Each structure stands twice: as structure tokens, then as C-alpha cells.
Image 1: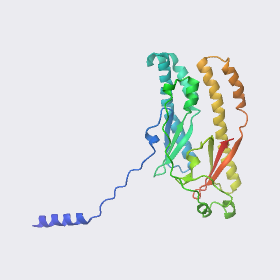
Image 2 (image 1 turned 180 degrees about the horizontal axis):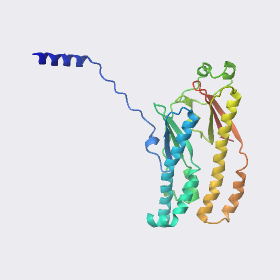
Image 3 (image 1 turned 180 degrees about the vertical axis):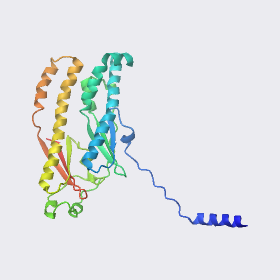
Image 4 (image 1 turned 45 degrees about the vertical axis):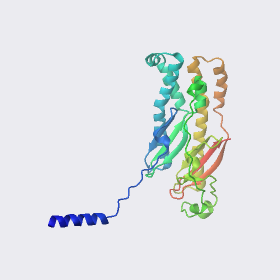
Length: 291
């Protein structure tokens, strides 16, 4: 009798117990798990040193991921063009393929990013496929279209949120007018530095004690300009190096390219396109684009 009563009691309380709420799994962007041949994905956990360091770590991992697929891609091009087996390619052109992979890898750049619910940052980097195809002389059958980046659910920048910040006095906060919409509470250009026809770069500077807003802005601007200038110089110089490797000489088109390489050392005209201050962390973001 006691056992029967106990079973009834368990059944009663089990029925009254609230249903367990199962949290739906987070949907990450498709590119996180299925990057293209000329794209790489890297991630980085929350970093106490700030978003700048977190993003840098994620980008480096993404480039490491891209290095493997890039080398396979170039190897497949040689395989198809020379109609020989892969073992023979690796023996004959191993050094050339490795050198080209390293050169093109330096040209890779961020095209998208995403924070998950734990603030882990994922970064997607890629190479310009048309540019790479042109230098390698790849026929149309290799020029497959990359995955389209997902549409971002953005919201307009709210100046009132910034004005509640304690990062700087009100008179300074009023001068910060962010033009871009926000995604995951950051400007869209943080995730996608290249907007429309602009080739851009983002500089992030922490707020330091005893340093003014103008000094913080100067640091962020220098970081953004430096990254964009380095990218442009790398593109020009790597084209010259790639042509030398592919043609194994320094004549004709390569000789003409050398004058362009020298121009890479000249400063590239840039514009501060937008600026944003994180109202919580006080990190300042500056978006620079080529004119």
C-alpha cells in the first residue's frame, strides 16, 4: 500500500512540475562552418585586453585556416593545367606553389565578423578571387562564385545611448556623430570594413587615463591608416613577386610593374569615413577608407 501511495505522489508532483525550457541553439552565419576555397575562418574568446586584441587573434587564426585551402587551390590549378598527377606536381613545383601561397595569403583581408552569445568573435577573411584568377591565368571553369554574405539585421545609431556614457564629458560626446547603422551593438563597418566601392580599415583605441579624447582618436586613426596602407602596398608588391615566380624572369610586364611597386611606398590618400565610441568599454573605433 505504501509503494502505491508513493507512486501516486511522484506522479502528482511530476505533473505539477514546470516544463523544462530548452534554449534553442544559436544560429551562426553559414560561413562559420562552410567557408569557400579562398576564404578562412578564425575565432577568439573574449579578451580582457579589448576587442582590438580579440579581433587580431581571430584574424590571425582565419589566415592560418585560409593557408591550407589556398595551397590546395593553387595545387589544383597546376594539376589541371599540366594534366599530371598530384605527386608529380608536388615534386616539380612544390617551392613555387608554397611561395605563391605565402604571397597571396598576405593579401587576405576581413570581409565579415560575428559575435556569438558568449561574445566569442568569429572573423571571415578572403582573397580577391578575380585578382588571383587573373594572375594565375585560371580559366572560367575555376571562377566559381563565392557564398553571398548574409543580410545584417541592423538598427539606427542612438545618440541618447552615447550621451548616457561616462567615458567623456557631455560636450565631447556631443561631437561624436556615428553615421552607420549598428549590428550587434557595433557599427556595420566593424564587421565589414569594405563597404560598397570603399576599401576600408578599422582602428580601435582604448581609453587611457590622463589621455584626452583627441589623443585617443589620433591613435585609432593611425592604426586604421597603417593597416590600410599596408594592405595596399602588399597588393602592389605581391603582384610583382607573383609575376616573377610565374614567369621566372624580370622582363616585359614584370619590369613595367616595378615602377608601380615603387609607387607603393608613397602615402595613399585616405578619409576618415566614420567614428564610433563604445559607451560601455570606452573603446574608440575609427573607419578609414581609400579615396
